[in-house]
Image (tube, rainbow, N blue to C red; front, side, top):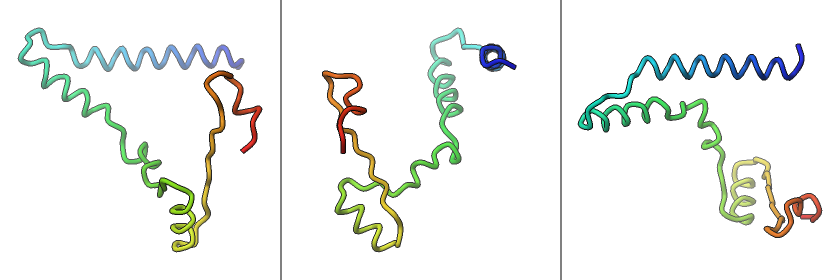
Amino acid sequence: MMLRQRLLWGAAIWTAMIGSRSAAQPRPSDDKALAPWVEKRVQAWQPTAEERRIDQIAWAKDLRTAQQLAKENARPVFLFSYSGSEERENAMALERC
């Protein structure tokens, strides 16, 4: 199947899922019931523990702290550096860390 067809099928399925979900929870007509309804929807859309696995990473504020934690726990350090600029869109690709 071509990529375009897959994308169209995916979009159709996603639209059907969203449409059926919103149809199952109709918006209340009175203002007093609106706040609890919104709160319930917000809680339902919160990410699950599996979706929040990135929070388990031991983030460090600076390189020295990261190196100290890595040494204490016998773990590697992953360093992400962004050296771009606002003037040029592709500055990150042109500059070196």
